[in-house]
Image 1: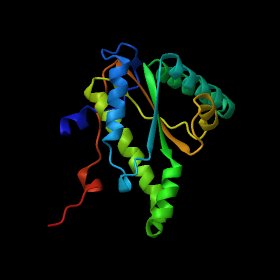
Image 2: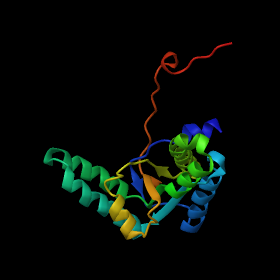
Image 3: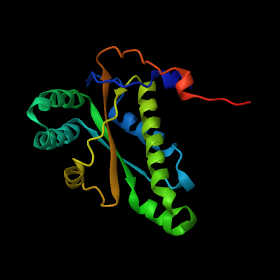
Length: 195
């Protein structure tokens, strides 16, 4: 398992040269989300996988929305980065179903204040599980957060239910460049162990 965790890294140099077919890949993504833990087994994570032109449509939305808010000096580097995401084979959209969160708050009033946080944790675990499964299949990916800027257009384009809250976007594709070494903070800053 630790080797898989080492393999999961951010890849910005994405391509469309995958050795796995889209049906198999879609099944892999679904299974990773299914197997991810969630509070009270709520299964609040929702996923939309976009391939080909559908993925391109997402990054066109991002480009359009970014142009409206970024100052000129920041626009070109941002658009170049977005082009890199669009160069991949597809994009996974991660959502959390707020109706599920609300229902749990009603059912378990004692824990009501915690369910939004637990939902975010659950989403993070689903994202991590998918990212690790992709890495195991030699598929590069990164995690992006253009929400809430793109939420309305995404909801309109892909008929997203109103209760689904967009949490992250994961462009994926073939690894078109080596992935750099990961650096780590000193253990003294991150860990404590008491015996």
